[in-house]
Image (cartoon, rainbow, N blue to C red; front, side, top):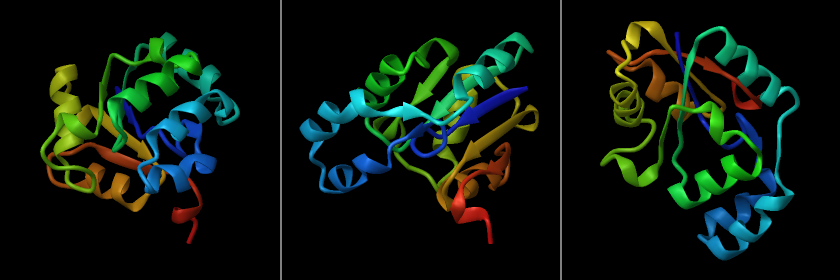
Length: 143
């Protein structure tokens, strides 16, 4: 199974950075990365998924410099075979292109893949035709 994850508010608690990201204050965002944490159980879950033979990827709407800095700081980079960020595709979530591009990078079959995210755009990107199934997480999907 190929498992694709959104980054912010799915793997990592980045809510405190949101006001700065919305204003594109990237120096402040980058300076705050050391204060970020993963959600409880994320590293252990990643270990279990890798031991079970799953292939893991990240699909994020964040810039690569931010994504890689977060993943490295939190010790998560080692789990992912591929990372697709904002500037890697012409279209962005909710368009399926970032998800499909990630699957292409993995050489993965969409039918053997899932997308896990917290926002409506993650869900939309993961449920379009030829895209993987999508598992919603977070408050926005507890309706």
